[in-house]
Length: 34
Image (tube, rainbow, N blue to C red):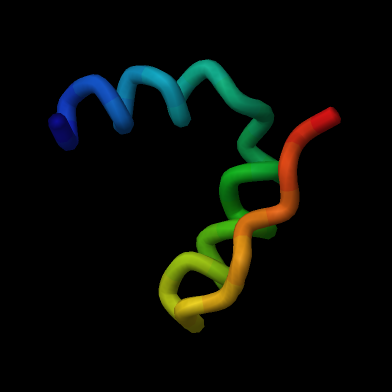
C-alpha cells in the first residue's frame, strides 16, 4: 500500500526521490537506482 511505498521511499536518498518525483508526476519512467 501507500504506507509501505512511503516507508520504502523514505529510505532512499532525498536527491534521488526529488529527481524521480518529476518523472512520476510526468508519467515518465523512473530511473533505477544502481
